[in-house]
Length: 390
Image (tube, rainbow, N blue to C red; front, side):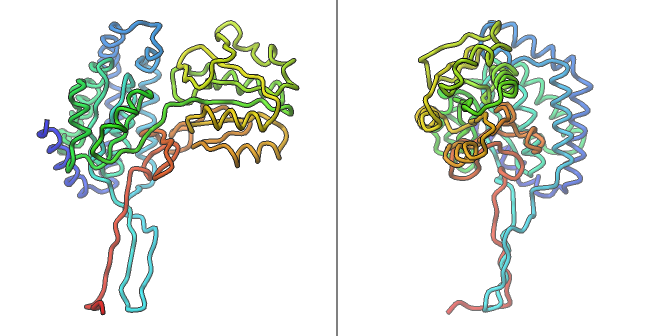
């Protein structure tokens, strides 16, 4: 498999010569090709869907529709419209000896992504990596094998027509062995990002010899405070839970202040016919039409529950009490902390980033939705006129 890694490494060097205008033009052409080849892409996706039980929580993540493909193409166009993350000077100074320093943003080089039954990731990763001057190595799951192959073939066709080396996006075999190869591709993979459930993330964390940014599984809470507005709470909770139950920003556990327990039935009314409610089962990422519920005595108890069970992804408070909301925002340790807004907004596109390459729950490096800025690094440009260090 070293040949595939070498292709990506070679491509990463050639991408440095492209202008932002060239990158944008190619992204727009790929987006157009996605729109033009919807039936081919949907046919490949149906092959994958036929092999998965519809009751599997991953089924919705695997599913592509005409509308979803159109949204994918629109996200790619949005990425093309964004300012380039490259060549930005974040620090500059002139030293007393006259040496001039500039800290300038540059690509990582080759970014490897390991993901499961999420064919949309193929498009998001390509668009963000290509825009930021990175080559990408994709390792999708077996469940989405046909969908991913079809997507990469369409991308490669555009790259060939435009004279761009197709090593800019490499699709690995869907085998477990390919994952291990990626995690040990020292000298080829500059950064690896896993996107998936806890089991995948832990495996990557425990076995990688290349640098890793962890994207966390979501164990997501919403706390309905004693001063929460009932109609607002109904809408926010229902959207957070039922919009798409299989995604990492979906609500897993609802905490309700004891003074509002009398309103619980009404609070849950919008989803009573679709969601199963569980009392006493906490710390679980459901990815299904299930919801844990706990009655708490105070904001303190809600905060303590979140400290114990949160995965550090997204947490929300519903309240009209600004002091309570500010305290919640200050004390909750998560990548995204919401006040009267559903956690379903934890998404790169929703944050105005065009798309996302993952949602980081770690604190070292990027945190939250990662897009163009988060997949660049920097180098120091040092200029002088013959100065000598004493």
